[in-house]
Amino acid sequence: MTEKDERFQRLCRDELPILRGGIYRIVGNAADTDDVIQEALLRAYRKYDSFRSESNLRSWVYRIAQNCAFDLLRRRKREAAARENYSERQKAEIGGKISGLLAKLELAVAALPETYRSAIVWGVLSDLPGHEAALRLKCTENTLYQRVFRAKQMLKEMLKTENGDER
Image 1 (cartoon, rainbow, N blue to C red):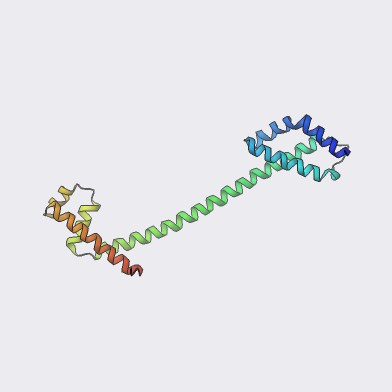
Image 2 (image 1 turned 135 degrees about the vertical axis):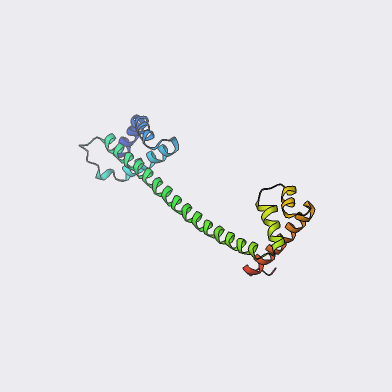
């Protein structure tokens, strides 16, 4: 066994609990702590030749582990910002589509014959109970529901032909 291997084994055996506690305080959870320590020990082992033996190996490895922990936190912050940016773009895109669809629907409702447009406005959009909407339109509740049904069919046809859906 080389001197390097012996020093690392001794470091892992003696200092790992202290190292783990310090890194846990930075990253905040056990799984990330283990990942950071593993990465730090691998980096330190690979770069052992650049270690100046007059320095303290434990301090050197701890500093590498801290840097790995801060790298992890920075990466998570960038990823969260990228997700947020993507989410905002998606919301804007969806909002634009919904606005466009609502505008098309409003135009289609406005194009309905008065009888059916009134049935949609009072029977569906007004939040009035069916009997009150029918009273305002001076018809029976059953007639109101028939008009709403027919208006919905007409709207579907208008919007289907407008979007080019010929199913």
